[in-house]
Image (cartoon, rainbow, N blue to C red):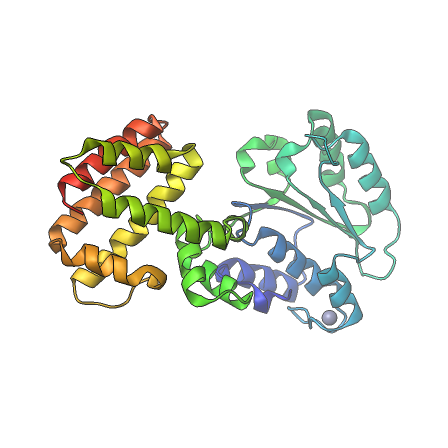
Amino acid sequence: MPFSDIVGHERIVEVLRRSIRSGKTAHSYIFEGVPGCGRRKTALALIQAIFCPAASDDACGVCPACRKVAGGNHADIHWVSPLPDKRDISIDQLREMQRELALRPYEAPRKACIIEPAERMSVNAANSLLKTLEEPPGNAIIILLTENAAMLLPTIRSRCQPVRFAPLSPEHVRLLLERGGMEGASAALLAQMADGSMQRALVLDDETLAMRRELVLKHLGGLDAGRVATVFDASEELAGNRDEALETLDMLLSFARDMIHLAAGSSDIVNTAVRPALESFAAGLKLDRIMQIAGDIMETRAAVQRNANVKLALDQLFMKMATAAI
Ligand SMILES: [Zn+2]
């Protein structure tokens, strides 16, 4: 995973490459961002570029050192994460890491350590890390991965170079999913729902999505303001818990966006698999009415995120949509 393979973080990559060219990489970094946005890959790219004997400011990606880093079995990289069935990273794990970093590297020019997720270090572990950050043994490079740097001790933050990763754009998520072999329509749909995280995109199972898409369309087609039961049935079946409701709302929003495109005479839509259904919905509505529905969906989504009652929020939304004669 050389820097050249990193998607969506061009500025960060450029800064890191420049630091390697000038021989001024930091001893410790905090990579902050949502899980699945590319923090770990970038950390490995940085380590690879430092370890690769052929590298100037980026790894070759093919030499034995590069392949070991990419394969997760380089002896000079030490990973620290909570042990299975433990919540926190313990001080014992930190001590082991310190012993490891104090040894001479086996083959790399320096040792490297990745702590993930850094916010799960116990207070003792974090305090013990402070000493290591002050005097990194053997020129070691330490990279902390965290979702939220504010959850780390200020004394740790002040000793590390902060690097903030933005969530990936839907376009970048789609690109990465397609690189991984996913077909275009599914990748585009998942990318819309992934909140900038490849991890989330991959968790959203494609088949479950397809089933949910069918279910949502079935209820949309059945909404009838004259028969309130159709509205309550829809929210009953589609609400689920908060996360599921948010997924439903993301899907509705994605449908509404497509219908706006269709109503405006564009065929540039994301949900190509259900195109006929969307076309027939769009045909029955004026463009400004669809845009109003999209606005209602966004409002509902914001309310659900703010902890509104999920079922009530969907009841109200579907009633508005039924009145729009979808
Ligand atoms: Zn290499």
